[in-house]
Image 1 (tube, helix red, strand yellow):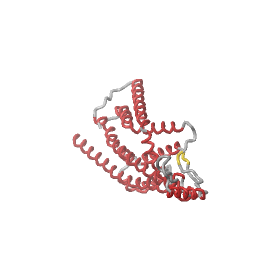
Image 2: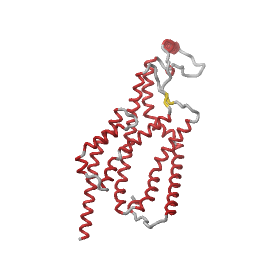
Image 3: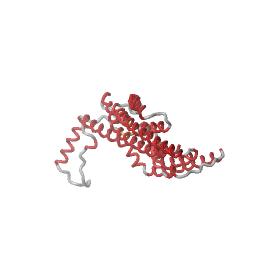
Image 4: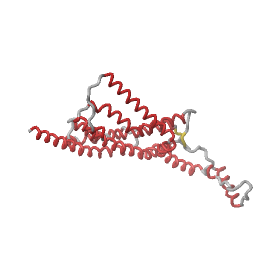
Length: 310
């Protein structure tokens, strides 16, 4: 990346100049966030549909159960197609009469599961929250660039080298963690709503979108942060705190970390915990290879420096 490879100005600056630069970069990041949020605001139906899909899939499944358990739904009434003065056949009348008899003898007593707003301003607030979240995601590369441009001049060339290696790995692991979290949500929704059967029937869900969005963001954040384990271990290897041999010797701590990661999933269902713990175990093993690569690179660099000195 250019921001890591090019020579950065390392001249000393006064405190007021540092504060001025910080203020300028914060203002730029806020402008980026505003532009990204405005774009996300107009793309809200698509973006909310993406977040809502795991809950919607389970609601459709549960509503189908309600229809099978409670009789014919109101949507199944056999309306006669055509203009109002169209001729109605005897078969169509018999079909409608059969539907009326079935519905009268076994009517639906519960509304279908759906999302519900409890306050008049919530539809706008949910749209605003989703727009801010996706707006930040869209402009995150620009935000990271501004942060890097502020911090990197204070680092030496040797200190920048680990960041140049860790940054792309961190981004890939973040994307991987968020993707796993998204598909985990389908199983989490199924697990949670399966407990509706424990209550007097018919019992349905009227979901507040605010709570759902908050839970969804927590789930993705938990997976995204937990999947940074290799980056954290590589950073510690650059600092000389951990070694590949030590990670192999103390592999039981990897199991403990993986189990702890599963326990801290927001959903707390067994399937989500497994989808968190198993990848963490794999990432722990992958971290050993990455730490060994760091050690090997540092060893070659030390040999090269020693050869130059001689």
